[in-house]
Amino acid sequence: MKNLSGLMKQAQKLQAKMAEMQAEVGNRTVTAQAGGGMVEAVANGRLELVSLRIDPEVATPDDVDMLQDLIMAAVNEALNRAREMMAQEMAKLTGGLQIPGMF
Image 1 (tube, one colour):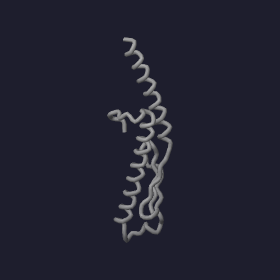
Image 2 (cartoon, rainbow, N blue to C red):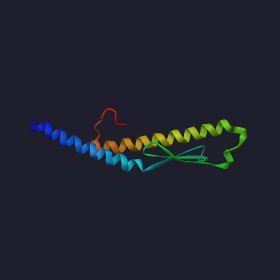
Image 3 (spheres, rainbow, N blue to C red):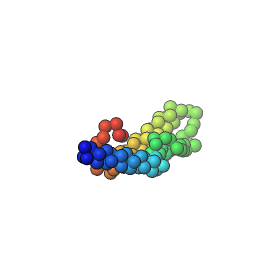
Image 4 (cartoon, rainbow, N blue to C red):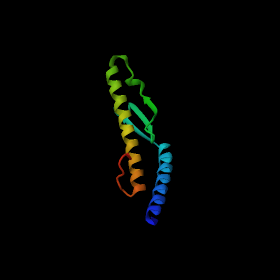
């Protein structure tokens, strides 16, 4: 019974550290670009798009499809980088142990 109690305390400590880490990483941002920097997306660790910059040169009515593709590419890459950032921080916290359902 003593071992179970110790294990529960360790689990609670890990849970508190994970919540703290998620809050801290949630405020960090990552940036991704598409089209040679013509579109830039910034996402945070909460996987939210926080800014999007579009070079006016690429914003022409003649090629809306290309602009849409560049926006999607930049946003998807920013979100992938945010996920990777969170996974790296989680690996530091868990010592590389893969916990199901955690990023």
